[in-house]
Length: 133
Image (cartoon, rainbow, N blue to C red; front, side, top):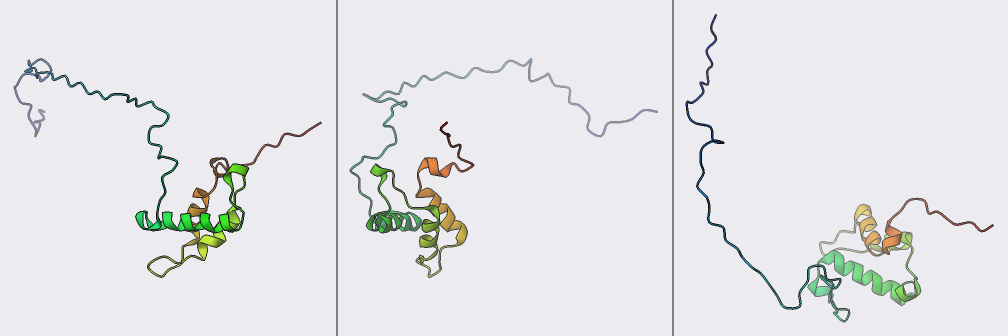
């Protein structure tokens, strides 16, 4: 019994053995004076740059207002290593109204509070405490 393949093979040469036309290689040299991608200052804004609440997205503006609020209470001083507690930030954000009249959700308040903390405070997990003795 002979089985006929419904998709017969074409009798053409293999694409691997067929010579291909070569494309002309184009060399582009890009250069800039005093520029390095590995620069440590790459993508860092200037320290003196001030942001206004009108020029940033709404949730960023809410975070800026939170930082101003906690600076006024004396609970936010990065130079001294003083940061507001996450629970206090959560309560603050949950009480804020957005431009559409709704309150910030619990999950979004959690995210905003996390972004207002230090990088070390964002890591989570059990802290290993060195014991003396």
